[in-house]
Length: 232
Length: 229
Image (cartoon, rainbow over all chains, first blue to last red; front, side, top):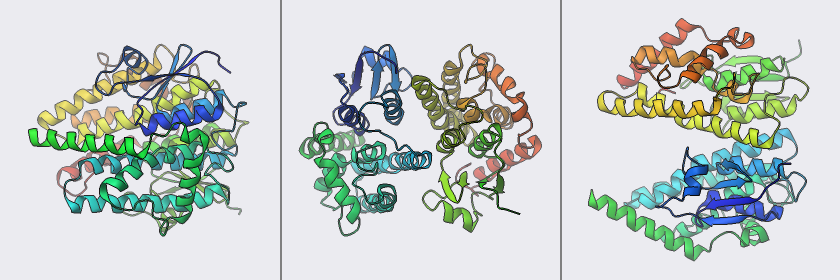
């Protein structure tokens, strides 16, 4: 196991950063957190993630690890003896978790970005339908992965839980802004219950920003997007 | 005759399929290959096995399906632990390998797609992006023989087919992306990887690939297809 101090470069609103923080929290790993600035990227960020210049970046000793899902796996492998496992032990289950995590980011991220830009009611309705479709797919995935247990990872929160769960603050903020019900317990009962359990977990409560805060950020981004469109 | 316990649904020209085939071959795993006529003629079986993304490759092992080529590569390495070691051992090296594989798929492939489906000024812009992407990718190689070090590994398998189709695409589109000026080390790796025995004997037919790439591009420009892959 590699030794050294841990630093994490992040942005409080980023689901990618928050998923890493939740796992660090769950593993009981202490780290120094650096809040980055969206516009003015720090020297540390530019130095340690020259390729993408994005957060999160985990700095372990003198090594930098970038890309949230890569970081989660690194934590899992480097601190395998500490705290609950991040990924399942069984290779097939591990592959399934990786598949769904990639699916979540592929599908949810563009939809949530689109919600910030959607102008017409039609466009908004389309996006909401898109989110529903993705969540319904994940309802099925949850039933299979959890095999009756509380989380995708089984008894404890794991890789897929934090990957999807880190979007919950944004999903709930979007519900408030649009008035649409995204986490609809009639359509996705198991996933809704999972969501509640997830949000009640210590490692999540300590990390996930409040809906109010995220809603304010989302509204600000929507306004910014609108004004930059009008300016062009 | 007993059904092979490993079945791979893929396409002969696909980079994503080829990386899985190479992993299976490296491990000495026998498998049945089913060539899918993508994108419009996918088999019922494929759609049943991967209803979520409906894409190839799909590996079926003991009746259980898996999709996403990079996920499959790791699964193969995790499951057949006795054979060739595909992933690096050290967690940091593994992190690097995963990072660069994602970069290659996200940036390099999409940039080349952009170069092949644009013209004029737009193409020049995409070309610049592609050249930068490959130049950046070269950093992962450095002075090593292969991305995996002295032997080929995960990243070599992931992007090995680039060495085969990049020159073909560059010829068809009449651009230069991986050259002595832009990415000399990567260019040398292109030659080296294609010379690895296992890979040499498991490449698509060059003329077929050339024809397919040319045809796809023409179909795109004539509006018959909306994307190259």
